[in-house]
Image (cartoon, rainbow, N blue to C red; front, side):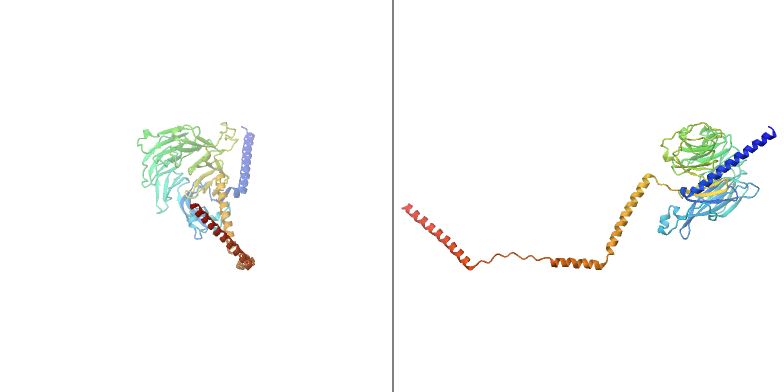
Length: 502
């Protein structure tokens, strides 16, 4: 190529980059305008440097006024220059109404103000403790009880920090840096590195791993332990394979117990929290894939929504799945819509090597578009429902909760409850109005009723007419005549009887 041709190519690359940046900025402006419609709460903070890792601690505390709750988190730095890197322990405040035990802790709900949605709120983020690191933190995992924090650094060393007694353990085995960590049991964890190896550790014995797995032929990208069968775990690698291992099998010749070769490199894997045979993967094919381990060659379902490589995924309760990647998107998936009809988009790939779909996936529930560069990590709070934290290459640290939308059934139930409450309130108001009526009015009513009773005419008994004396005498004479006639008839009858006898 000539000098002019090289210059023209560079100019085209610069122009293309500028156009993309302009589109990203416009999309971000549109997103900021729609924030009140999309979120119940959101807080954003600009970090001193971008971060590759972020995780919540499970516990939270109420403020003295009960208006807010304090959440704790751990975050790592990713300094581009030779400056010191740190693991930081921080906290931030959120409205106490988001806590699951809010009604119990704060019975008088009406006195708790709900703060407005605010995107930029740097004063709410506080750093309480930090630990120096020998390199950039590539991966971070918090134990289920929130006591121990694992970090995998760019120098290949793993550190474990006990947040209760401040003990620190160092685990040195891997020759290269790694980005795969997974707690298996309270004192046991797995690590995967770019040296193609997986190590199984006892956290109380940092000298050497318990067991090694060397079956991959590429860098280990992610690990996932089955929460229902703790001895089973899976891994994805740059060698295009997904492999499954059984910790109960001592011999390395029998592991992996299952292996599957993918069409694209996968960067993330996660087992379902309740269904032991269900797991999900995601990677360079820009899709999230749902599998049953009993038929691991073909996915049960593929989820379409990302338009670039997916870097991570995690289950969010039994029906929820969250994924993030290079397309600056964080997508929440709802598996309760799996039965809805959906046709996969064309398998053809355009010039930009991005899948396109003419119809929205029915399982796509929400898209968080608050970042202007790749999303590096997402944390799901283990106790506060739908509270997420995200960090990206744009140096933004965001904490958010999507707008709560009711289903049709929930809306109908809410309407019925509102009608019942309105009816009860109306009845109570009527009763109170009757009780509060003026007592003089009641007295007037009683007096009017008495008057009506007094004014009503009294009915006299009907008297028979009085007979005159003459009429009485005449009546007596008639009765005497009747008696005499009867006697005469009796005498005649007796005489006739005598004659007959003779």
